[in-house]
Length: 260
Ligand SMILES: Nc1ncnc2c1ncn2[C@@H]1O[C@H](COP(=O)(O)OP(=O)(O)OP(=O)(O)O)[C@@H](O)[C@H]1O
Ligand SMILES: [Mg+2]
Image 1: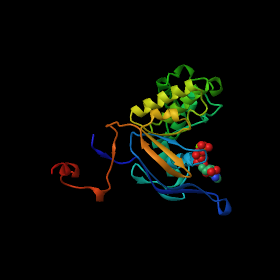
Image 2: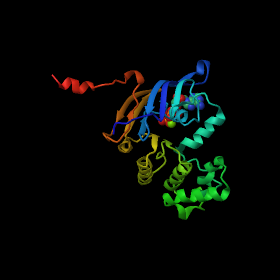
Image 3: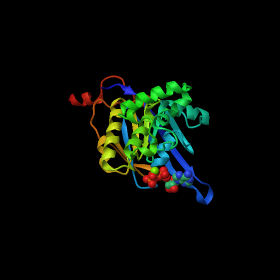
Image 4: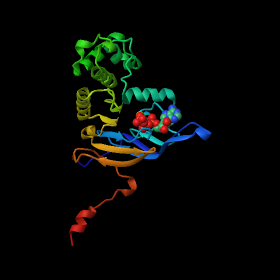
């Protein structure tokens, strides 16, 4: 496939500063990153290098201090909080290491929660949530409370909640960090399936063995990208749109070189 596609996420010279004065700390430093639709990006790197900060900025949970952020080609770094929340609920699903389920709500109520922002009736919300839970084979546990479930099951509930709004981007911050290896495997298989259905995934992990699921592995160091490696030779992966100035007409150089 040779169609050029528009990046889904584009960060240009992005910086994030925490604190002021002596306590000032640059968690992200002039970071450039382009992610295409359908990529499965894993972000690795030592503790404190800025992985969560990066994910929170991409997920519109936090704002950059300087630089540009294009989401689906639209500049979003200066939009209002209200607009940020709306974009987030339309486009982005979050999965956290500690699941972040609401303990006093049942499984199905947790999954249905993001649909409140859509203005759906309660009956409709529960119906949609039930359908998503079915996909994760958790429909028999719809009325369990989170504390009655295993860690792996709770994380799958959290994934169902992240997907309930049909977002195109899934952001996962160490989603298997609190799970044993068997549950990790099940969660990764779910993410793999979501990726195969066309979603873009950006996942932070400390576990190098999980990178076999990724199409691209980014290593961060001190708020910057240290290495960025495509791990798959999948020809179906999209190709970045070229900068207009680089577009050439006529015969490609390669074939010209072959003639001699
Ligand atoms: N709210 C905050 N206020 C001040 N400093 C912060 C804040 N959040 C993060 N930092 C600092 O920014 C740096 C990057 O933090 P971040 O949480 O992004 O790291 P990380 O790569 O996710 O680490 P870990 O692997 O431990 O989760 C750290 O030095 C941290 O202390
Ligand atoms: Mg982190």
